[in-house]
Length: 299
Length: 286
Image (cartoon, rainbow over all chains, first blue to last red; front, side, top):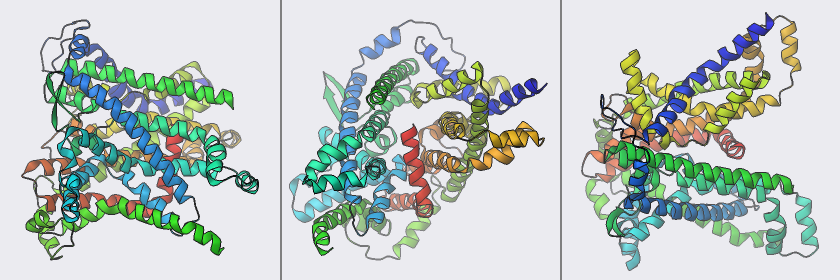
């Protein structure tokens, strides 16, 4: 009797999330994997037939997709690096005994709470109007053209905006880690005559290594999935030439998938790209799990 | 003491300069929201010539048929509050039974939730829309373009990480209290709602912060579930349709962005500690 009631409560308490999870993740995921092997068009009533690896062959020859994958990889590595360097630098600064350090912490964190879409529009205006105005005022030729107008500078503009948005968040992770470094250790090393740089290099950085692993993967995965800022800041523009075809120079993978499905109306190839995207993210996660395991062994 | 102050002086200056540079985009947005169309084109950096221009700009923005500011803000609020409510209640319930019941089914279900955290939205988004249409055609439940459809989707996408956070917290709660309540004649649901749920408050705040920021700012899921040109639209959808609707009138766009920023900034100033703590905890456990 007690056992039956327990089981009833178990499934009863589980059912609301299980139902929602099944309906919006499990079933669409299974459908998605299936669709990537068919000629699915998304049109109501159309017959869908199995085509094997056809869609994957199609996307393999899709230069716009190939280019997007390369740019996304470069972008992810670049923003991961910049975000972590800036975040760590800021964390070191605001853990000093500065007068306004609490205001600085609060302020640097703020951009991260603002939606990517809103941020992208803010920065579009800054790059297109404000920075050229500064360039004119100071007579600096290089600043007078919008950074968003050429492929290379537009790429760095996205890295810059993502870093501006995200560094304050990662900074908080580093602050939490820095505060856990025992003070006695730092004082002892000072007494022994270690310079600030030696303390950083040989005590602080090794002590907060776990935070580096967390922050690195967090920024890598989030950069790889970047969408909102991409849409509102550049929408993939400007167009450039790549291996003989014209491609969108700042179109990252999430946006390429979206455009394939909704702008070009190629649902099945779009879904095949999404499955590929998923596989890459799974690989990144497995590498992360491996690193975490290794770290636990070392400790 | 004074030597220390002297040592810190360059750092003080450096940080202050960095901080001002960090906030300069906000200056640009705010001052340009107060300008006339002409001044936005001729003088981007300066202060507004006539601060009173804000009244005219506000009037154009609030009454814009693409933005429908008050209605969009109301829809965003309804969607965020109701989604958070269902996520908190149903995820904590699920996590509690998953921790307390040791069975193979329980372990499997939890594993499935954890594994699902790797699934990016892009891989389910296309079939999701098709599937929601199928549900409508076969069962007559309208999932697309409705509040309940979107809130249901947020429960599905938000529950796995929330269950994961609750699961970790509940594991550390001793069983004794629940056993005592059980002896006193409380039923299982009573034990959960009267005893366990109140203890979960710290982690509930983390769950609220993480999901709240995500849902309030989310663009892609509402775009797919609510569509465009719908009477129900969230603030990000409203902003995007407003920006895309006409030749760029930047002074009005800047004002619309300010209106979108204000609720977030005000909320942050009030709940700063909880927000920072929640987000850092969420990242480290995730």
